[in-house]
Amino acid sequence: MKTIKSPKKMSQAARDIVATGRTLALVPTMGALHAGHLALVDRARKAAEVVAVSIFVNPTQFGPDEDYLNYPRDTRRDLALLRERGVEIVFLPQVKDIYPDGYETFVTVEKLTRTLEGQSRPGHFRGVTTIVAKLFNICRPDVVVFGQKDYQQAAVLKKMTTDLAYPIKFIVAPTVRERDGLALSSRNQYFKAEQRKEAVCLIAGLRTAKQAFRHGETSVSAIRKIVKQESRRICPTVRFEYIAVTGFETLAPLKTLNKGAMLSLAARVHGVRLIDNLRL
Ligand code: PAF
Image 1 (cartoon, rainbow, N blue to C red):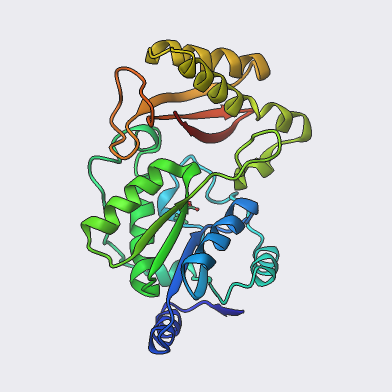
Image 2: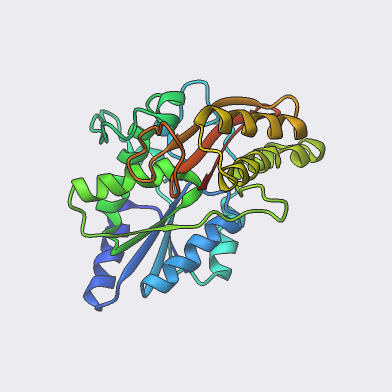
C-alpha cells in the first residue's frame, strides 16, 4: 500500500494507473475509519481495479462552533485497517497543500444545499463540494463511492459530478449499522457506554415511522410525531434539529408520504450530533 501526501505525487500516481490501462476508484473519507468506510472500500473494489482512499479532515466543511479540532483522528489505525483491506493507495494531504495561503476558490451546488443539513449547518456543503471537487481533480478517479447515511451529501455530490461533467461513475452504498441499528459514524466514539445505548433511539424512531407508513399513515406531521415519541421513549433528552420527508433525489419536502420518499433527521443525542435516514 502506497501512502501519498503530496497532491502532485497523487496526480502522478493516478496518471500511472491510467497509463497501465487500469481503472481507479476513490473513497473520500475524513479518517476515524469504521466498518461503514470499509464497506465503501469493498464496494469500490468491485467497481475498479485499483482502490484509493483519501483521508483529510476538511476544515472548510466545519462551522465555527463545530468539532473540527476535536474530530477523531487516528491515522496509524486507519492505515492498518486499509492495508488489511487491500487498498493500493492512501492519499493523506495536508491542509496547507489543499488550502494554501490566499486560497479563494469554492464550488457550490445551489438549490440542493438549501434544506436539511444545509440549513442546520450553513457553509457545510460549500466545504464538502470544494474538497471533493479538488480530490476529483487531483486523483482523476473513474469511480467514486459515498455512503447513503449522508444521503443529502451524496445527492449534492452527484449533482456536482453531473453539472461539472466529471467523467466519473458515482456509487452510493447502503448505510452500515451496528447490531442494534445505530448507523456507524465516526462521531459514535464520543458516547460513554450508557449514552451509547440510547443512541439507538433515532433508528428506532425512523423504523417505527416506516411501519406506520406501511400501515397506511401518510401525514408528514403524524410521521414526525411518531419519530419523536418513539425516540424520546428510548432517550428522553434527545433534541431534534429536523425530521424531514423529501423526494429521494430532489430533496424537495413532500406534503404527504409516498413509497420511495426519504425520511431523514438530525438530532443531538447526549450532545452528539447524529444524522440518519430511511427510505420509505
Ligand atoms: O463524508 C465525509 O467523510 C466527508 O464529508 C467527505 C465526503 C470525505 C468530504 O470531506
